Length: 463
Image (tube, rainbow, N blue to C red):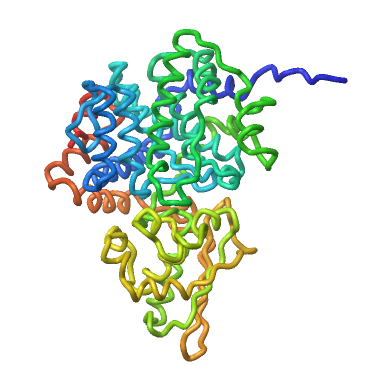
């Protein structure tokens, strides 16, 4: 029997070399500018989340675990740094309105930003350091997600939780001054903490909201251990029992994506900002439905049936189990329901936060229209490169209207502009804060990258 020799340079080591040597001047100005607007989107969402019940329960849980001095986004609380990172992840991701790297199917800011804020403030770093480390976290998270070739969902893992832990480990390691060897070790260590189950889809439970915050906390933990020369497996990605071999169970993967194009291709620029507060897999369907409604003057009562086509992998997320998708029990079920979103968009001519409140969820006419939605497999979509949507309306007079959105809005081929993101920020933060607070936060975020202490930025973004 011939035993293959291990690679001389592991993928984690390649990432470690890159992360240790990267300087702010190595990052194109357009990448740093887009990074600021991605942070702006995330912070606005953190504020908006504070009006819901889930942060109240999260802060009570952390109160049971202790206290600290680290500020929290959008809230007056102070916690230990890792707990603050976890709660910040919950706040950024809790409404499922945060950015997504489309091909990686990963919410990249929701773990990278909380880790960057907590690690930067504990290190006494500047916002220049924080911004660079955040960019690193996004780059690594996206590439780890890309290596899964869209398959993590297929086996029941949430790629945001899985990939986000690696990005957060690199972010924290860089801010705490670890060298290439230490950053390599941190990735190896966090590989044993990298998980997040999709079982919440079965009953609308809240675990998904916790995933990116836990990934941020895990990344910080791994970096702290690596700082003390704790050893982690170098081949954590490509090894026999590495990430892809264990988590994807023999499905297609491309571990080389983890280190491919570092410093040459900036995955941050491919990160999509959401125009709707729903699962990204459904955005193209919302756009297609609203376009048909506007172009043809269609009213809900004119529609006999609705046919939607989706790739089977995202279809598992937004169409199963059928009982929860055709009759959502709460706003979290609704966010992941293709039939509900299409029916609601057709009924109301829009889809925003109001379409997820109790009145909308229990509207009898909407629920009756939801039952007219049929979902079939899409053989012409672009998944995982983009999230496609096909909608066909059959009217009561026999007319058939169709619309395909092959590339979802927000995708890097159809990006929201920085002005669009600023408008979204104004809307989201406006649900929880006054204009003076919004102005203060906007100035702090768009000023990221100077020599201001990171703690000043964190304090400016408190509630």
